[in-house]
Structures are given as C-alpha cells and as structure tokens.
Image (cartoon, rainbow, N blue to C red; front, side):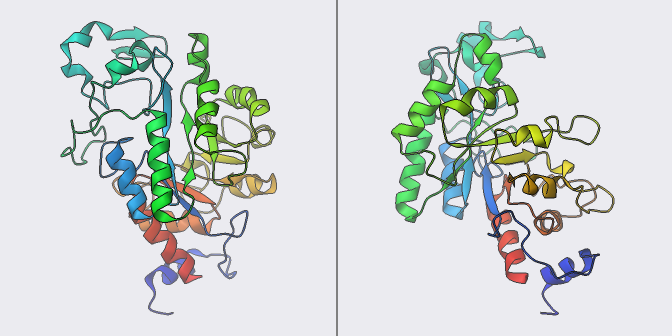
Length: 327
C-alpha cells in the first residue's frame, strides 16, 4: 500500500484526513465517456474514432449532432465544417462559405448542404499537435450509421454501451425551420434506445431545448454547463434539476484552481439528485494548476464526479481503475 503512487497522491491531496471513498451519487465507480470517440488519436466523430474507443473498453461515447438541409442528423461537433473536414478543398462548394449570425468569419454550414453533398467530404483532425495521419480517410457519419456501429459494438462486447448524444445549436436550427427532435427520437426508438436504459442521456447547453424535449420522452437529460463569467454555471443548478438527471459542467467550475478543493457544485448537484459528468480531460491539454492528466483526473475523481469526458479514453480508464483500486 505504501508504494502505490496513486494512493500516495490521494493521501497527500486528502487534506481533511477522512478516509477516501467513492463519493459518486450512486456509489458506483465513475464512468469514462469517450468524447467524440477516441478523438485524441483519430479525427473526431469518425468510424475510426468510435471503433478505437469501443476497443479501449470505454463505458460510453459522446457524439454531437447537427442537421443537413434535407433533414438528416449527422455527427459533427458544430454546424461549421471548415476546421473538421476538407470542404475548403472542394471548389464546387466555394460559394457556400458565408457569414451568419453568431460567427464573424465566413464558414461552411452543415445546414446548407444535402446529405449527398456531405458524404463527399472527408474528416480532418482539428486539434493542433495531434496526428493527421488519418486525415482524408473517413466520411462524415450519419446518426443512423453511428447507432448501428454502437449496436454492433454492444453485440461484440456482450454488454450495453453508454450513449450521450449532444444536440448542437437546437434553437438556432429551429428558427431556421429545422427541428431535430422528431428524427432524434425516431432514430433512438428504432435502434432500441429508450427510457429503460440508465446509461442513455440526451445533452444540450440550451435549457430551452431541454424544456421543449422533456414532455416528449422519458430519456434522461443532461444540462451542459459553462462558466457564466463569474465562476457560476450559466444555468442555476436548481433550474437544471427541474429537467435534468445529470449536469455536464465545464470542469473548471468544480474545483478551486488554487486549492484543488471542491467548489461545492458537485455536492449540490448530488443533493438535487443529478449526476456530474465534467468535460473535457485531455492528455495533451491539462487544466491549469495540474502537472499531468493523471494528477488532474485523480483530483476530480476524489471530488466525487460520476464520470468524465475524455479525448483519450484509454488513459482515462487506466486512471479511473487505479483510483478505484486504491481506495
């Protein structure tokens, strides 16, 4: 016990002297959610990224969903295509680069392309410093294609895989005449994803969207949260709890940047019955005040998070298992 480096770290970080225990809402070990698949190794949201994450043994995966002009849900981090695809190399789409409200620079927007046009694009690694060896190899996935990949992965694993789809810009799209809710719920139902699955969460930063979808499904909801600029969530926890079974906070909201002690948000969320799944843990972009991702994730696990989003699911799983094994 005395030579276990993880346990030594936890003891040194445990300033109140109490025994270290799992502080998750359910008492279960925290989960690892592969953020856009294994996006640290392959272009995000591609078949390769999701296949790698499943092979790593991730507990869950997180896709982002946007909509094409002909009503298909596709898996992209944003409505914008410029940074994550080779759209700039397609001369036939040069005229689609436009300026829209909310973004000062001209961009190519998913909602201005049909699915057939989207299928001609190939994904690229948008994160600086990561391998670009797979750039240009993989097409953009539809939501249906991803659901099939997950069901095949579950069949191989012989166990359910958690699923946390995030709806991007839902009310912006609604204002343009695109309602993501019907195709989202229809696809989930068709592939057997319903309220009976305790590892299924529909996510959004947009509280109005969660309020709109809540009467239409019993599937658990996650209120994603950002800092309001004053160290508080942009949606108050009590308001989030009226709709959501979990929060997905910007991780800096949960720990004091100097002391690394809990700000109290995790405990308050638990008291309101919500799980806490912060974002995003990255091997190559550690949060301020931490020397490496292991130190960072151990601090958050010790603070009681119920799971975390990671671009490097293999690293996160290893740290999580070491944490649980050291208690």
